[in-house]
Length: 462
Image (cartoon, rainbow, N blue to C red; front, side):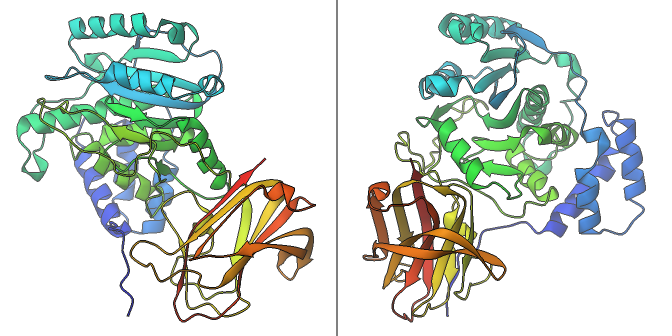
């Protein structure tokens, strides 16, 4: 009998009940918009229906507009053109340590000149202490003046009068009062930052103010987004820690900002994020490995307590990121549960898992457009399933695409080599074959009793 690793997931119905409970409790709070109140009253008269409420939440008209906040520009000016990615940072005064300048430095130093043209960085100085803000603005403008002039760094502040009540809040989870105030204000800090960033780029990634970045992280993010083309997602995760490296479509930011603001006193922001993702019908976490961002702070922004959390999947130098151009995948192997073929081609922490393959079984990738391949790498098995590898197999590439039943396939294939110890790797493919590649095929050459995990398929194009 096989023991499976199960991700810990909160059931959708559980999320729904929590959501409706919070909505009901919040009706009496004067901070909720009148339109939201009316929608809640109407929704509360119906029986819980998961599909209905997911649709309702996705289409909340009041959630699609900006929160009415007049921001103060402390450094920089509004962007003149839309960028590909906005990086958001929210920072407050710490009792011990200050890592904000190092975080900003890491963002810029780990980006190439071409990447810098596609990013904007927005720093929300969210502390109400004006003296601290002035010192930080002075330090930022001195160290990063050329980035401010180039229009890729802005420093903003949301005034205190726009914040909801931060005293006498509900003490959920038996947290002390000051802890509840800290995490509740942090939710509002993030909500106002996200609200500001809603229309200045195509995508948005949240970082904390004590983070180190991988080299060329933007290029890695773009490749992951491309590999997921045609796939529905709400949040992509590029770190497994806190509110670090969480990527969103910018069109979802207004709803996320309203969501954090509406439930600001209920729970920490990283818990709220999982509910937001679930309510927008992304069931599972989609996390990229290796991680692109690392927590570097030693002292927490809450009371200066020690925080030694590290992401052991982080790699600072990512020199060899695969391209994995858009493609469709299919196999005639018996697939176990939901470990389908597409998961072997994804950049995230997933894999294909099939039951004992037989001689002649295939795993086929059909590229949307013909490609020139430089390098191919395929890994099978996992650390805890080391025998679920492809024991006998080969890898072929094909050209001359033709229609076949409900799929397309290649009429001719050339064999590039055999798998060794469950793995396959080859370079300079473009020098070994005389045509552009339309298809790639993993071919089982001998029946095996063990199941097969295809952990990753990586393709580099020229």
